Image (cartoon, rainbow, N blue to C red; front, top):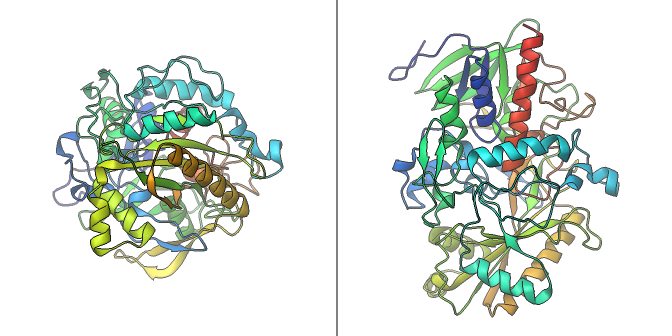
Length: 518
């Protein structure tokens, strides 16, 4: 039955997708293009570009703000940091940084004896990387000095560098660290997008992390989800999934969800869970599904993400331009005493975000805080994105505390290991040196963790993983998983592009499976 004021649901689709972020959206489009009847359930609402305000506070609805309990020595901050709520998921507010993983990111254990190898390699993902980059319109340099081979150059030239990026570029040159314009899923020139229309070039508004008001940023609502709806997919927003439906044999048959305050159900031939590394294991643990290995909720990871900030003489206007315009991956490997590595990024920052970070990070309040913020236009930032090993002590569990829906809140235990602490110390020292060379004063560092990764690992062995290398649950028929919960390792790059590539790969495998079992 349809909830009052909401459209009726199509009956028994071939595939039901739960979540419309980087895991669910490309897959949804691919399945729709193949002629399958597909429906996606999204907990959040639609946020069309025309309704996006240049106002950080007004855009709070883009973030998943339900309480998640954080525990451990380095408790992870949720909400704005790493979780999206809306049609398009966290791509509504991601910075659109889209570097590829390196070939050796997939073979960390083979190369170092630590971590976990992926059950697939760079060569298998490369065609999908290329397809995603071309479709969503990634802007980047003609020649990129790091990583594996490419099928084609970036579709668009790089975006202009903001003030912090120019400072970073000069400082890195002094110490012999190579830099390059970064790959960003933001248009440097207009592009026609099937299902959406013309997406304009970026206006350098700089509010990527509070939503794009023009469609220049490749959030999934204006790219893959527009394509999916063009080919007949149905996207149901405001639908919070509370349980998966199973039959007597244990096969997953659909989902139960709440929409407009009323509970509904929808049956489907196959269910793809793409709810992210927190909500995916939360749903599975409630019903003890796909967990014969005991790995659901385990191996939680978050990237090393320390930031360094300072004040410079130049009037930088840090809210202008794409936030992450410059990159260096010279520290991807080869750091003494460190397994894995990190990349270096320039930063832009919106005013409320910076004020909040500075106050919390330095403990500065009152007149001193006001005085510092009066110099906001002279703020320069730089940060890293670093690998994180999977550890037994980092995991998600269900707490005894209930949310407003009467469901157990997730509790995430997280503590960086010694490897990550050495990596963070190396990165902070390098960034402080760079900012000293740039003439920055009042320099301060903000230790942080970025992204939520792991908790439903992919692998060949059902005893040590939740899904197979293509996304099919080892022990639960009718269930596939496609989000960054499936990452065996964190990778030393931002996860969005890899997740979109995996989404297309999983979709192709699912289409083949459905044909073979028809």
